[in-house]
Image 1: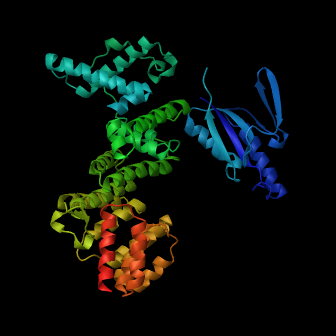
Image 2: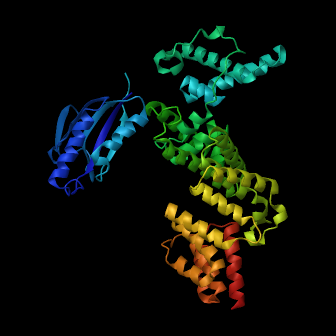
Image 3: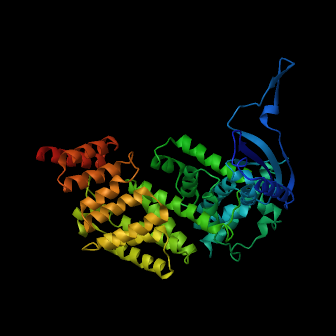
Length: 114
Length: 379
């Protein structure tokens, strides 16, 4: 099954910002290591929601607004696309993502299989 | 049987429908052709065949079921009496109690699939509309399928955490029953027995079963004419001596397995409560162990009750007053009782009044109101 692991972190000053430079480097290393883990088919870090643009189409015309679709205290900061045998395997990988222990959370969403 | 079918078919709804089909077929054929040598295998095989028929009829994608994926033999040429099927109740239980499901859904699904309760019965037990319960079950079953919750006993590195969830669901069902719906308590004990049979070497499984047996054995004596009777005032002839003995045997097994987890400790406390005279120092010590294990202020409150017996109400009151449990009715009821024993009637009455406001109408509230009235007439 395929799962999208959506990585949410707080928009406010996070536990990550309080880490030393070396510790931050180690966290980036963990993200790279997860990218290279078996089953991980892709992933990316997103720019903060302050860079987001939201697009709607109404009566044929495109409406563009500055900012994210929903303004929340926690924002989507990145994702991994994972092919795993079952939810337990997806949860295990999700638990390894540093954001999960640095005040953020990982939402595990199965993809609709075509 | 349902557990095996779910394991075989990988689909809760399909398994339920197929089981119903098989029972209907049995009701028609067994009286005519005689009961098969192995009725369970017969039913499972028949149900599986019916499921395959259904799938073919409904043209469901073959790849979606584990059965067809595995390459099933032609369904109609299976020798019904030679095939054996594994008991997959344990797999089913761990699936129903997966932490990715909401706790209410875990409880409902466990009662529906393992307890065999009807949706309407579960709805009544949890005081929700049948439609609400039906929807809860549908949502849980579709999440299991869509999210890929595995049908299996978790591997060793996940087992301890997951076993905790399974035991918690069983104990929750029991406690719902303890609060008056005794059918649920019996169901929880039945599940607990099944668990102990399936995992005989897990001390906490034995601990929970012993705990439930020991508590439930005092059920008849807990109420008199719809009113609560405290353990010290209970008519011991109403206790189920046989069940207490059975609970002790299971507890001994848990202890022999070197069990020292929270359920084993609670069962040991429950066993001590059935003895006369009660060994209060031992009970207080075990509550202390439990409090350190769970960090729960509710346990600490229970310890205070035992401490009142060993060191006196003064020492107990000091413990109670250190607890941050202001919204908890039993804190105020306990404080009230301690204050009453210390002769501080005015404060005791205040505490009883506070407990009353936190308690829903019913036997517990009437008990508190009687205490309050007695106190006021005495002062």
